[in-house]
Amino acid sequence: MRRLFPVTDETAAPAPGGASGEGAGREWSLDELAAAYAYPEPGPGGPGAWLRANMVSTLDGAAQHDGRSQPISSATDMRIFGTLRALADVVVVGAETVRKEGYRPARAREDFAARREAAGQRPAPAIAVVTASLDLDFSLPLFTSPLVPTLILTGAAAAPDRVAAAEKAGARVVTAGDGIGVDPARAVRALAGLGHTRLLTEGGPRLLGQMVAAGVLDELCLTVSPMLTAGEAQRIAGGPAVTVPHRFGLVSILEEDGFLFTRYGRALPAY
Image 1 (cartoon, rainbow, N blue to C red):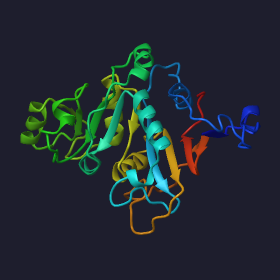
Image 2: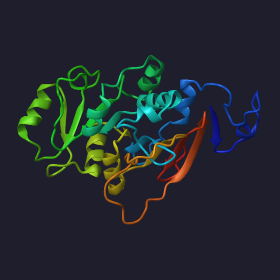
Image 3: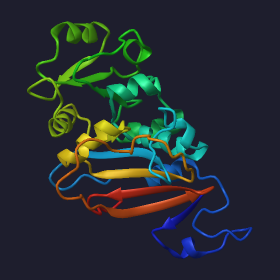
Image 4: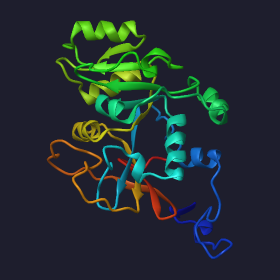
C-alpha cells in the first residue's frame, strides 16, 4: 500500500520496483494503519464526540452488490475496516444492515489491546443498533454473547414488549428520540453521555443518509473500489437530499491494487 496524500518527501520517493508513494511495495502494519486513522485529539473544552463513517463504493456509485458490501471490498479494505473498529468506542449500525450483513459482536484484538487500554477503552467496541421497531432476532450472538453489551438506540414510543425482549436478551436500550424513530443528533449525545466519544458508523445507506441530513457526521472514510456493477444498488447514503450540499475537506488518500482509501473531514483537525 502507498500514501498518495498528503504529499511528503516520502510520498514522492520511488520504492523498489518503481512504485512511488510512502509505504509503497509493502503491507502496512496495524500500528501504521492505526496511526493513519487516529481520531483527532479532544479539544480544550473536553472530549467531544467525533462521528466517522466507513463505507465502500464502486466506481459507478454502488454501495453493495447482491445486497452486501463484501463483493466490492478487498483484503486491505477489511484490514482497514478492522482497524477502524479497533479504534472506536462504539460501532453504530442500522437494523437493516444488522439483518443483511449478519452482524456479530465486535471481538477483542490482541494487537490493539495495549492501545485501547492506554486510551481508557473497553477491550472491544460496543455495537449500537439503531432501530425504531426493534424487529431483531435477540437470540443471535450479537445480543446473547457480546464481550461488551450491545446497545439498542430507539425512540421513546418503541413497543414496550420489544424493549423488554431486548433487555431480557442482555442488550441496553437507550432512548434517542421522542417518537418512534431515532434522532441522529440525540443519538450522538446519548452515546457521548455513556462515555462513547469515538464513534464509528458502518451504515447502512439509510442510516448514513439520516446522519448526513442531521449534520452530525464529522468524517467519512470512503473506499473507492475499482469495480463497475451497474444495476440499481444503493449509494452509500440514501434518503431525502440536504438543502445545501455539505462540503468536506480531503484528509488523506491511500492506494493499493487500484483501491483508493480516502478520508474526508468536516473540518481539518490535527490528525
